Image 1 (cartoon, rainbow, N blue to C red):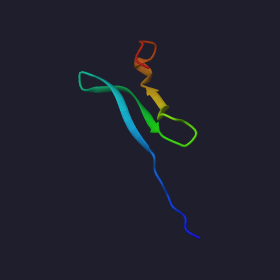
Image 2: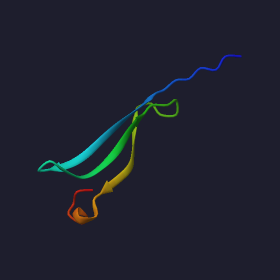
Image 3: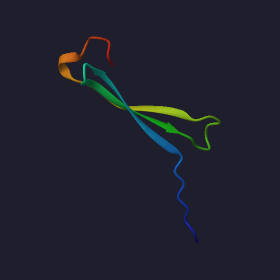
Length: 58
């Protein structure tokens, strides 16, 4: 028996930066699989620093 590993996803880290300070960040995973005809995205770990929340950043 042979087991093959295929990796069909990529992660992108996106961040909101103002005047050199990171205000928030998130990860966007681009995923391809046999269940979907086209790649799709999964947004995860969306974090905004507490002092910058409720300002429309996230």
